[in-house]
Image 1 (cartoon, helix red, strand yellow):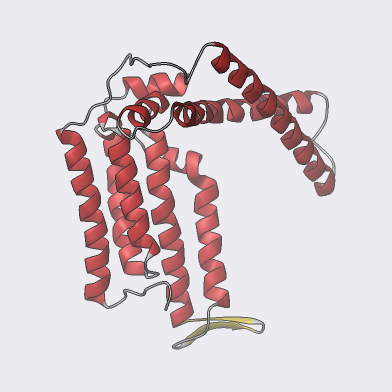
Image 2: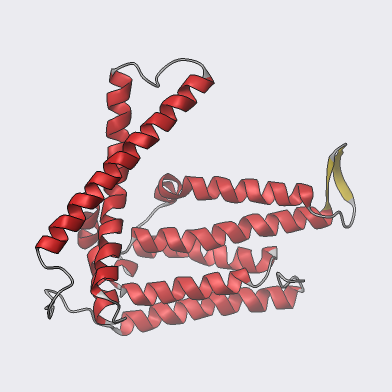
Length: 264
């Protein structure tokens, strides 16, 4: 609820755009980045995405807080690709069982940058989009079934609650002396136990929510809307910006001669 109120009070440019327009931009950029593995197109898209963060009222610190697992995964993926890829060009590092050459390093950097460039739009979208506005757009503009829309809304609302629930369970277990000390294996077992507790809480909460929504008649009969989901000139500019980013990434890679289709 606190995140929703923060979004409602945020007057940053991208927070006022229609969620479907932002979804279309994310899909377009992801599609373009999925066609090639090269560092030029990924760098262009990544730089443009970082420039959009102030337009959503976000900072790099918030990006790290909400997307650090994806950032670390992209870095590890790039390193692994550089190690296992076939050598081409001069060998830069040779440590017996694995080596890194100019070609494999370039491929690894491209993989890492591409992972970041694909993850950032999703983080940006979910951070600057109010779940209720998204549900209104999906139901009114996309004409999706009410049950799917309400399920999406409930899932997005529960994500924040699950994060708070994880912290609460962790604090309760530490108060009982569970998981705060012991060997790495004991800590791992404590974490698995905490995960199981979170799973139980999630199932209980989802069951109560489903029963409540069914009892109140959600998804039945003719619906009315408290807020109308509309398109504006801002959405046209958002779509144009997405097309511009995708085109700039492709043209830059083609001009630099680095464009490399994934199936080659």
